[in-house]
Length: 361
Ligand code: SAH
Ligand code: SF4
Image (cartoon, rainbow, N blue to C red; front, side, top):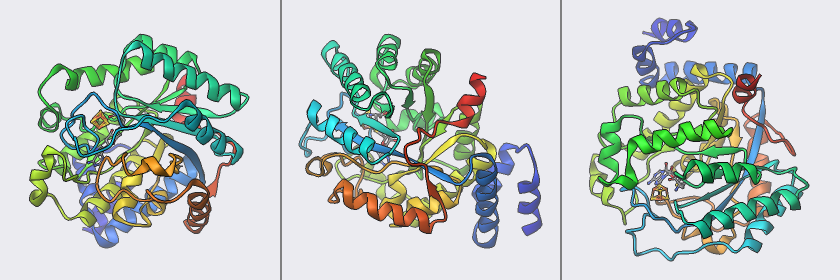
């Protein structure tokens, strides 16, 4: 058996079946996989970890994804939107501490006034930082025109998880209406690429009804769509969501964690030069989850810069970590943890996807 995994790892092209076998590894075989991913990471993207200071701009959302704690149907959460000053203050902290980039994330909204407000914030962040701070957006599906306006205002990367690449499963986790249409989400990924963004996507791992084969297909999806950066992590149930009713059918959290770690490792081997995030949901299950992700192939970390008083309202899932730690405390603790994981921090660098730069050439 061991020989099998070794020979799969030695290949240069992998079938769907190979990916499934890698995702099913345990014990010593899993260690072989993770070590190989670490080796590939070192060779192709190096040992540096890049920071993206996360600003959770607002938990207002027009959508109703069946798994998400800030879905519009959840009336048990207070709603907020940061003021322009709060966003700028968080961005300034990132800039002064040489984080290199910020990510602005929120529920999905539309409307002229909203689009304009985001556009203005982007220009202000660029101005405040002399154009030095890189900006990633994660604001859901928007029109081509909106994507273009935000791009021209200074954003240059965009995260839009496909959530699950199998349309039949997508349908199970989303309401059956136009606002939650698989094709529209897929099309948004094309629009982002067309406008010129570095395009990020991702999936949730350990969802009810999801099989290992589905996850292998998710990895092949990222490759087929030539994605520049990926953020993926375990699905974590939230009691105020419709999907909570499948709680008993989920695999134990630690299994979801390991499966997510293996997804990161297999993806690193499959797409050697992309950016892969060590996601917060990994840390929600294992306090050292992000550091373990770095050792399994991830190279991006998103320290939370949202003002502490809002954090309890941006609960996408339960047990979200660091909701009571301010940026300064987070930064110090993270620095130590990253160094212990054997990596170096790329202070003051954008840390763009090497994959993207190569395609541009
Ligand atoms: N509204 C935007 C961005 C914010 S949501 C969007 O949907 O694209 C950011 C991510 O949180 C989602 O893409 C989803 O993958 C993740 N998420 C939501 N609920 C989750 C849950 N219960 N467990 C794990 N991740 C979840
Ligand atoms: Fe809104 Fe994003 Fe949550 Fe869906 S996943 S409900 S779009 S915040």
